[in-house]
Amino acid sequence: MRAVRFSALTAVATAAALTAVTGCTEKGGSGSGDRVVNVTATDDKCEVSTNEFPAGHVELAIENKGSKVTEVYILFPDDRIVTERENIGPGTEQRVTAEVKAGDYQIACKPGMVGDGIRQDVKATGGTVAKRDPRLDKAVASYRAYVQAQADETLPLAETFAKAVKDGDLEAAKKAYAPSRIGWERTEPVAESFGDIDPKVDVRADGLEDGQEFTGWHRLEKALWEDKKIGAAEKTLADQLITDLKDWQKRVGKADITPTSMANGAKELLDEVATGKVTGEEERYSHTDLVDFKANVEGAEKSYELLKPVAGENDAALVTELDKQFAALNTLLDKYRADTSSYDFTSYDKVGDADRKELSDGVNALAEPLSKLAAAVVVK
Image 1 (spheres, one colour):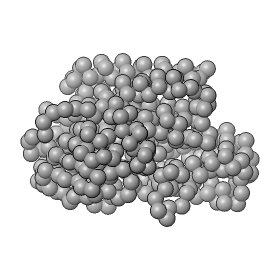
Image 2: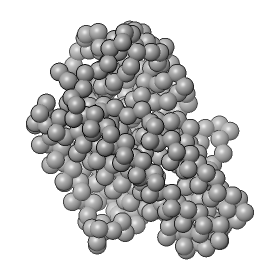
Image 3: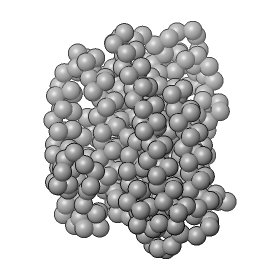
Image 4: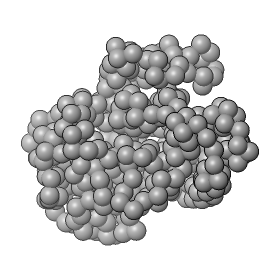
């Protein structure tokens, strides 16, 4: 679940950490050229340098001049996500490259990472399609097959979890909980791109909007580990979880996927780790955070490996660094499981502050170069 909803106090307290995690401390001039849109975010404004740009590749040069952590989106008219960049700390800058077809869009800033955001209508003009190395078409097709396979493989695992809940079997449900989430966590940015599924299945208690019902995995997690009981409401929610995941399974293969969305999605998965798993917020009742952590890294690495042949030709040094940092983070995670072929990780409440800091540093070291991957697959 994207870590998008912080209290004001949390946002201030974590701003420095998010700056490191997102690799967004670039200090340079504003973007230039007709394919660069400067986005200035404050606590009450979202200003764009132009409301019209050519179709193809567009780069957002984002600066957060507000006091709150923010995020910036390019959205389709129906609120599906073209691309996003989360966790942009106050006083920091980020650049994100996206691929857009001609048509109407919105650029949205979310100060405090809550609500629908402050929006600006924008338009991509002309019939131009972004130039693409033919190998990237193959990468997109392979990734589309991967996300569909993850959804297909998740359903029986989720049904095992749901059955245990409906049977009132507390221990069986606990055992089935974490495995049922792995495929979702590997491909979460694609699921989130639809806008309406993630809030149903993966919302946390602190992420609820006004009037939103607490449903999905984390509602059931709370019942199993904190409340230690399964009632009629939980059994109904188990059925609803399967209904919502079947919706995801049906739709995921039709998601809008581009090479840049794959690259940006890999970065988003690292942000998920930094703001939810490393902090212990995501699985606060079950403490299965390291299972999600590993799945997020695997999903990011899958996108990277598919894009690597082209990225390596455009930026060999970047690929060398990414290979190094992925290997280092995977090695670090292996310290927390006895069998590297299993997902039986150490309970996160047993991981001390020093070890959490080491994990956070590993994420930071990977997140910074990973933020450059989208630019490395754009035809120059």
